[in-house]
Image (tube, rainbow, N blue to C red; front, side):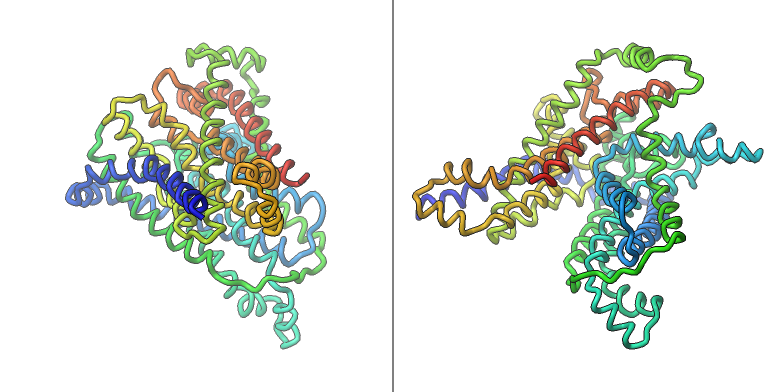
Length: 518
C-alpha cells in the first residue's frame, strides 16, 4: 500500500515540478517585473495597434469559421466519399503542424505580384496587388485557420445523431429549418469555440504577418518581438505582453469551457451528394490546399532564378554562414529532445488524469493561454537572471507548445487499456516496472509514436520562439527560411521551405500510419 502511495506521489510530483520549472517560473519572472501603471500607459499609447489587432483577428476568424462551417456541412450532411473526403480530413489534421513560415510562403506564391492569382488574371489582361495589404493579412489568416474550424465543428457535426434530423423532417421541417432549429443550437458551442481558436491564432500570428503583411500590419506578437529582440525595450515589450496575455487567456478560457458542451452523438443523417455539391466543396477546400500545395513544391518553382536546387542551397548556406549538416542536426535534435520531454511528461499526466486526478487534467492545457513569444520572453528573463544560454531552453519551450496535444493523444491510449489485463498481471505478481514495459508501453506504443511525431513536427514548425531565444550560431530550418525571405533571397528560401515541409509531413505521416496500422 505504501509503495502505491509513493508511486501516486511521484506521478503527481514529477509533472507538477516540470510545469513549475518551465511554465510557472518563466511567467513568474514576467509578473515580477509587472507594473499596472506601465501596462495602462503603454496600452493607451498603442491603443490603435491593439484595436487593429482585435479587429483583424475578428475578421480573419469570421471568414475562417464561415468557410469551415460550410465545409463541415458538406462532410456531415452529404454523402461525400473517396479521395476528397480523406483529403479534407488529412488537411484539417495536418494544419496543426504545418509551419507558419511555410504557409506564409504558400500565400506569397498565391497572392504575390507574380503569384498564381495574377498569373491567371494576366490571361485577361488584369492584375491585382494583394501582397502587403490588409486584405492579404485577412486572407492569409483565414486560409490558415479554416482547417481549425473544420476540425472542431466537423468532429461534432459528423457524429450528430441523425435521428434528431429525421424527427424534424417528420414534424414538417425543411433542411434550412432543421439547421436553425435543431443543428445550430447543438453546434453553436463548437462554432464559437472554433471562432475563438481562429481568433487566438490570428491575433498571435507571426510568420504569416511578417512575410505577406509587412511592418504596417504587424500583430502584437510581432511588435513584442521587435521591441524585445531589436530595440531591447523591455518595458514596452512586457506591457504589450500582458495586454496580449489578457486577451488570449480570456478567449482560451471561454473556448475550453464551450468545448465541454454535451451533444447527442449517433449515426449521422446524410443525403446523396450531387455533382454541384462536389464542385462547391472542392472550390472551398482549394482555399486551403492551394497555398499548402504551392508551398510544398515552392523549391521547384524558381522561374527566372536560372539556378539548380543544389546551387540555390549552396547560395543560401553561403549567405547564412552555417553548414548544412549543422542546420539539420540542430533542427532535428531540438525537435527530438522536445518530443521526448513532452511525451514523457504527457504519459504521466495522461495516466494520472485517466485515474481521476483533475489537477493533471488542467495543467497540460495552461500553455494554450500564452503565446509563444510570451513564454519565450519569460525564458529569456530566466537566461539573463541565471546567466545561461537561452538557446538551451528551446527544447523545453517547444515541449510546452506541444504538451496539450501530446497529453490528449496519450490519454486516449490510457482510456483504451483494458483494466482486466492490468488486474490479471497484478494477480500474477507483476511489479510496476514489469507492468510498464510488458503491458502498458506495448499497448500505448502507437499513441506514444503519434504523440512523439506530432511534438517533433510542432517543434520544427516554430519560428517565433527560435527567433527570441536563439543566438547567431543557432539556426533551425524555420529560422533559415525567415532570414532568407526577409533578405529577399526568395529562391533560396523556397528551396529550404520545401525541405522543411517535406520533413514535417514525413514525420507526421509516420505517426499517422503507425496509429492506423495498430
